[in-house]
Image 1: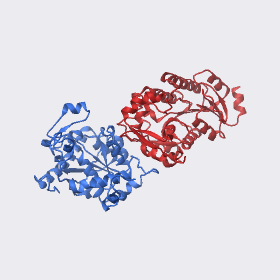
Image 2: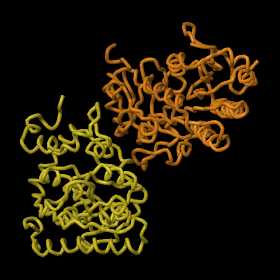
Image 3: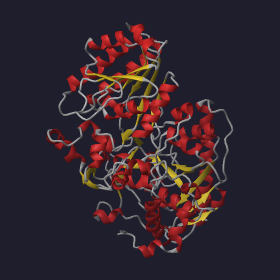
Length: 319
Length: 288
């Protein structure tokens, strides 16, 4: 059956986890001409969303995922299925889903001889610390979990991907650690925050931040899939910008709040729709600026969207 | 809208031209107008405009042999003292206001700075960065000018009785210079060490406040916040001849200590010469 499917499709097969997410959908739209795409996600697709391929509502931790691997001979797997901060999930559930689900997925990748695995990590794994130097390279220590357990799952996935690199030499495993991904079509925490007419900002602190445009992110994913390699790569946009300047460019107004007040009020805010968690607070106090020199050099990659365009694309200014 | 300083200040000849002349900054700016280290030319221009008054009229700074600072990557090694880093501020202004051509000297700051609200932001907007070897290496690779205080907190926390007595030097910057093949210019700042004359320190209170030291001067804390104002001593900045250490960057610590001693002697020489010229008239005489 597996071979039969492989013969039937001319294009190589690509599995995308977290396929209900906006970034996955954007990526699938761009890759639909190159790959036959199968998307999986425990969340259903939105009503008006048309996934450019086969979509299955499957949890990565469940055995249904094995069946997908039995039916389709994937050449590449794009792992975008990490649940980020959400008020609906407690830390334990999130950890179970993210870590156990990833473990299960990687196990299948190894067993079914997938040629290429691309894992989407995050720059949060480096942690926000006062003594961080600027332009952290991929070798920098991962200190994200030092202060808050909420980031342990992200670090664990990162470590699992690194383990895959030497444990499964037949599969080329690429791990991307992008900075804040923003764009008009995304709906992640940083986009929701910047789209607010008033953006909270820690009084007296204005760290440097980096932003990657959603289109550049998709281009980077495409580059990784077309030229598979084993390695870890940071991905940042044009350059860093102070948070307050980013707020200004988006067209919002900064609302300075003392750190202690915001930290103590986080519990109450978590119950509202405010898109933020306490563990992210330090990223608004100290800089975590990454260097993507290795990625640019290896893939001959250059961003298409300037920093200014990236921030203006959030569209708040025009509205 | 500009609240401070007023626009007419910004249009004075010595305010706008220094920042705009620094081509090495302009070329690094991204599409949002910031350099890779968070420098904002507008904030820098305002800061320089305000501080240049203190530079010219309060401390009446005189520079000696500033032309010895070479083009391209360079480390300025400066003596430290006076509790608050006035010396750092004056070096930064000297290179910008009197450098030929004007250039931005970036401080590799103490690790305490990013933890201090407002100050951390101001430092970043003016192009200063936290003092880590990685930051230093990246800056020097970009042919920038950085300045370091090899004595660190040991130097700035000196009491008035130990003024101009160089404390133990760190070695990190020497290794950085070897690694990046960067010349080091010994710099002596004379006058800043008397501007905030500490007699002793509140050691216990400093520990509670988690700060390196809390000085007691004849005016502080007796006069409260007013006592924090430095005295208007006349400041001279003497630039020594650049030293290019030639050794493998994997050389032993004892070799680095030898280089350190050579550099310390060079700074000491400038200090001795300057102090001899200045004499006891700390408020009026120049040490150039």
